Length: 200
Image (cartoon, rainbow, N blue to C red; front, top):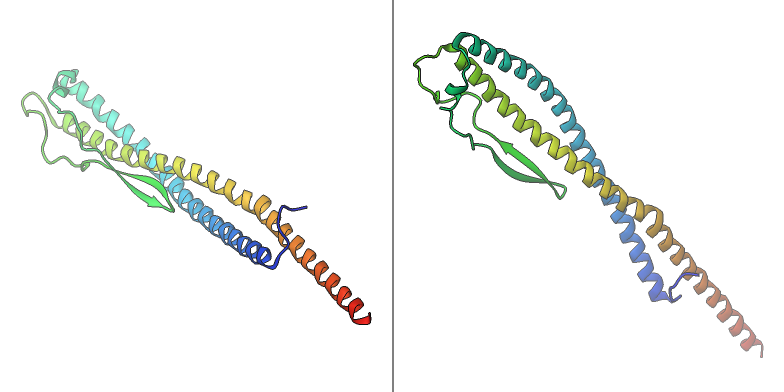
């Protein structure tokens, strides 16, 4: 037997709560669908980007190998390249989920950070390929982080939707049914009592 008072006010309150729970479930279901759609788009884009990264890695290491062969080991030349701190992270919200937006410097350098003495174009090609690779890796990190956050939000939303659908809404429906039956029973009792009084 539910823990509710079988009154008309209780019935109205229970029906309002039931209506609100159904609306909440509908909104949770919509949110889950939107998050799933967003995650699937990111997964497709990440798979495509992974292919580009693999190709760029191959070209970058081939260019580095060419530079090492033509210039000798270039470890001392790389000391001239400054530390890159151009990666910036901002956040955007998708249905209340904070998604990172990672931006890096352009993949095409404005100027070469090392001197022109004792080098040739093989080092320039390696430098440009690794810059391009950095941009791709930043975008992939953004996508993978977004996918993990969306997956967590989907799981949490699914739990809430399931709780509404399988526990709260059935309990509220049972409460409404109990109150309606109790009120109908009281009405029948009142009708019989009035009929008996009328006959007396």
